Amino acid sequence: QVQLVESGGGRVQAGGSLRLSCAASGRTFSTFNWGWFRQAPGKEREFVSAISGGDSITDYLGSVKGRFTISRDNAKNLVYLQMNGLKAEDTAVYYCARTLIPLTRDRATDARYYIYWGRGTQVTVSS
Image (cartoon, rainbow, N blue to C red; front, side):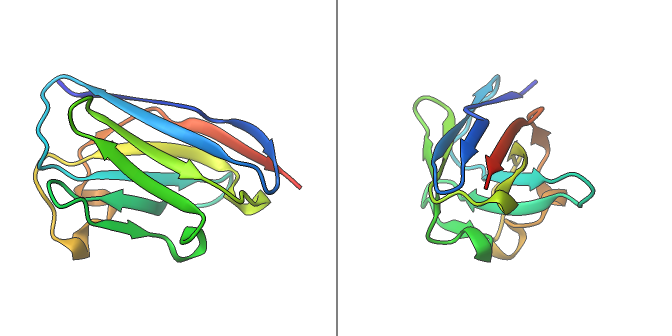
């Protein structure tokens, strides 16, 4: 059984930075996709960023492009989300997710294809 644990959330002022980490335990392969999703109060969960397996192709939500960077460390089974220039609208619970099989790029932003999920970490940005 795979378990994902997020860390690194917190409260920052607008313009600040945070780095989220997600650690996976259990069965590990380098070919799966990792994703970050978020859910703000009263809103639906939305895709934030994803990174593919061996070729590490990345995708971003338009509003975070240029501010957030996703990366992975296959050897340590970790994925990161560096968040710079945070805005109040980035406030949400951030979830790490992982697939069971490699995804085509058109599916990488779709939460339905992610099998394993963490419990989330709260990010609060004050203006």
